[in-house]
Length: 239
Image 1: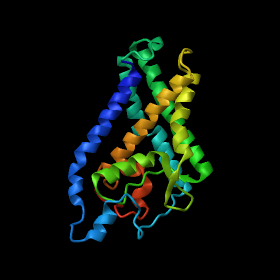
Image 2: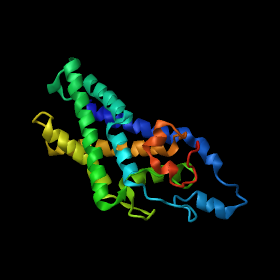
Image 3: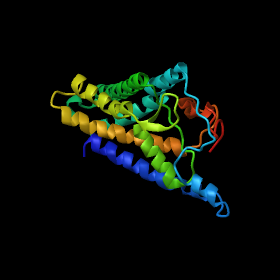
């Protein structure tokens, strides 16, 4: 098993765990005596009376810097470099501290490039790169919302999510840069595309985690996504 196959396995395990742990959330659906409210609550659509305020340029840049160089990409790169080290992937980088350092640099560089491309393209197309938790209840609607949000974004001043080219291109931009920039020469376009698929899958897993993870005001996860201060119903509260 290669390091990349192990990465896929771990991502699938993460998705499975996140999908089964919050089953108690389903008990929060509105009572049956209010059928109209129940219909709205179990449908993954945005509530009509909620508001949307587009993030400022400063907020979006701060979010980009946190996503690209903050504790989350740093920790993830350390862990993934350890997995690659265990499976000796790629073998040309050998073992020892030097090999681990190269693998960590590769993981961190790939993540930074992906995040930078996502931010740059989103600025070009006026897309909001922040993640907005579903204004609905129920396990399946919220999971569906998280997965769909992997390839969608709010455009301009509209809160309605649309297909996001920047979200699709970013994961592959990072792996393409790695393969043709610093990976051994035997790696090519097919490898870059395969690794980009794993990258995209990890984004989906992160969205599922953000959808269900309790967010406490002032925590680092709260600062990661500014949607908690944009007039959303769950602003600054635990969920």
